[in-house]
Amino acid sequence: MPVPLTLQASLGTQLDRLSYSEQMVLKVAAVIGDEFTFDLIAQSYPFKDHDRADIAKMMKHLLDMKILRVVNDSTAAQRQRSRQNKRRRQRKATKGGVGSTAAGDSDAD
Image (tube, rainbow, N blue to C red; front, top):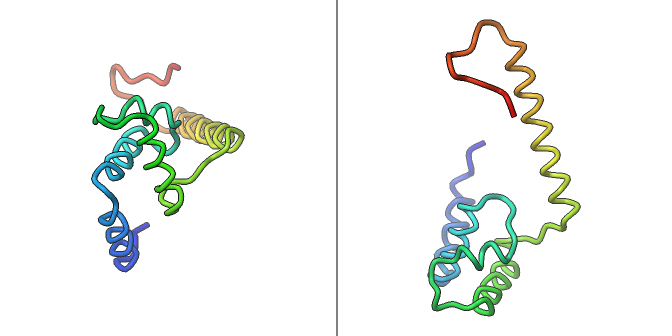
């Protein structure tokens, strides 16, 4: 689904106002994926001149701006189960398809 240009511009403006260090926190988070822990961000943050307290402040600011949001453990677990079930359904549908797979392809987990 395409994002409307007005929304893209608004998001771009909001992100441009962040400090370079806060932008790096978001880039690290984007590489990690949809859900991550503070510890993983802190371990992966590329600039070692920022300590954990600095990174915590940056993440708090991003939370306050509603750029990041906290997901509780039960919600995260539910999403993970949902993604796993979706992948299982997709594999099952693919196995039931017509034709053969290319040599070397495998659905074994």
